[in-house]
Image 1 (cartoon, rainbow, N blue to C red):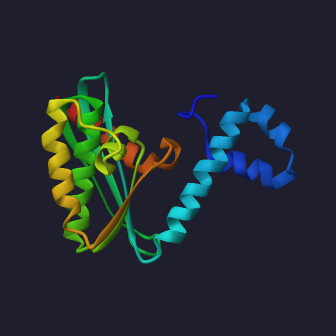
Image 2 (cartoon, one colour):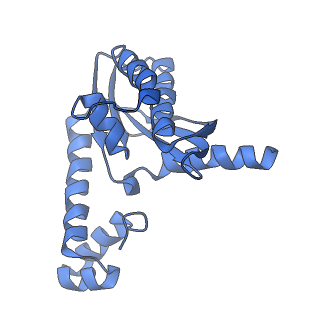
Amino acid sequence: MGSDKLDFSQVLEALAEDLDIEGVRRRFDLSREDLARVFRDTAKLINLKIDNLGFWSLYVDGACRGNPGPAGAGAVLYGPKGDLRAEESRYLGEATNNVAEYQALLLGLELALKHEVKNLSIVSDSELMVRQLKGAYQVKKTHLLPLWRQALQSLQKFQSYTLTHMDRSFNTEADRLARQAIDRQRRKG
């Protein structure tokens, strides 16, 4: 089953109901690797919440219709107790998916700074962007370098921050906002 269609909460609820791992795998058409990913990503999410008590949470996502294509950015900001504090979306025009991901992060960082956030836990489903910002990957595409630099500069404005790559099933609200920005623009056009 593709990760786009996998609802982790349904899988976990089904496991909690009858503890039949093989039955749940068959019911959701999951490979062993899919099920292992459910557990790994759920553990990451729980650890992220526990480790970041007192931290604000920022979920960001960029979306494109085509690559490149019409693009949007979405950001959702939660307070330290998990309460929704702000959300924002922006139409980006024609862009690549990676540009949209960086623009979503920059949008979210602006939002957090407006709310005078000091400690921030950032979640993105863009493994490339997260690894580039952590220094694990080089930024090879020259058009991404200015966005990468701007993101690093913005991150320095926080007392502390964490950057986590998470499966897109945990990032549905930011994804929804990014796609809404594209749809709004299409209706105008």
